[in-house]
Length: 639
Image (cartoon, rainbow, N blue to C red; front, side, top):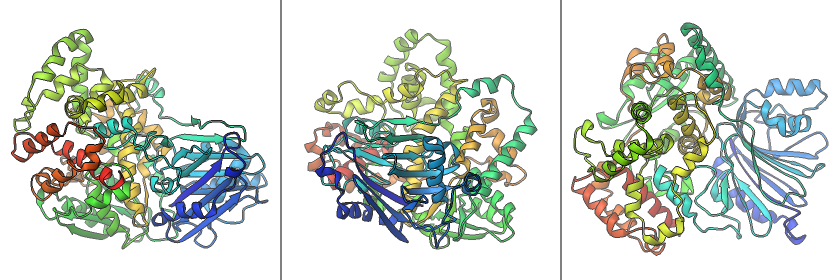
């Protein structure tokens, strides 16, 4: 796990003067991500190109210094991540005549490029973001892994130079970086709580999307991204026609996950696993324990109030498998990190579970350098409550023509009050709104931090005009455009894998772990396991209202029953109480700061009304206010 950075002057767009790479500037860019690679750094400079690397040593501690070159030094790579099948690829390449100087997975990439060119990515099984410079072909190739586990940001500057790096703070070191905010990104952020790929919070700066690459030649005049992998949404239709034998598919599932875990246990430094006590992390720990004789290291945090503490469930798994279990109890009012979140994430980021995620990474680093996690199980096997709610709405949506739904439910959605204090069956405002929408827009509405009507209420006339009609649902509509999904569950799972997974979940873990020099590996997101699992019939995932049903049944022999079938808790914090109490002053100050007001994005009278309604208990606006506060904090620090 590392950080990469680079400057490439596109010959067709830049002057001869700008073809010379400023070595001091590239070193400054690389130093900005020193936390990602505290063990080593390296550089490559050539006419028109500079590559930089920060290293966290995991494999081939002695010989894995980067950049790494091919036999004659004409092909060079900088790489962030792990290629888990590198030994198999290396053996194949050696048979074809390639000569290896190291036993690192990084060198595999160089020779794979020589042998297969842009198709090299098809051979890699792992998590990665890398850049290859081929001095013979005069080509730059940049790729990101299929699920977006490792990040890559890039920007084409006014002087014709492309800059790229693992984090936005790398790019911001360049004096020509455009720091103007993207208004569409702000709309998306206020909807989702993060800025979804490929956008960034800044105009002209982008995230390379999962499963995409950039291939630049000497005559390239613009930056074009190419998709080389996608979820097998087409195949799920065929698979549904003939459901697999129940026991056979559960065995295949466990064999696939075991193989994915085994691949990720290769390390020359101490390795362990996060253990929350939930289904997914418990499964990973159980499989790890079956693959080695020595006790595995497990890491967990708990909270000092019962409603937020699940450490007893983690302890049950730790006891069953006799792990070296490490537990730290965190104060439930641990909001000291809030100011630091903006520095860690480089753009507004509103997932409040980033706070406990930071703490568990911090404590894990005390014991291990590599940690496996259970991320991905809820998205892959339909574990979220929102999936069940959406399918229930979808049944009604399919029975009533769209023109009728809009005529009935759109007015109801506007008129029905927001009854946060009422029993669940009376909180129908979001449901009425969703029933008037398309399936994709309805799903976005149900998971929004601030729903469309809430955003419209707080937006200033100037901001609405500048958005020029753009709203976040257009992004969701585009993702599913011209795709015929097997069923509505497959569609919303696909949307989560394209937005929520890389933009929220994987971003959260990458930044929190890298802040402490900790590598996190995600076996459930092994792309071969994902490809197989995504084609499972939805009836195997959702049964009688039980999410992840088939997955849980497959895990029954190795995971305690209570861990499998308890209510999902999540990595939550007492956000509503914080905003009413210890964070109230910060909330009011941040949302009324001069820098935020100067942007003329909001009607601050409406925002202050939201604060008052939340604090006096009239409505629960915790998600929306936290999202606005994190935007305000970002602008306060960066405006």
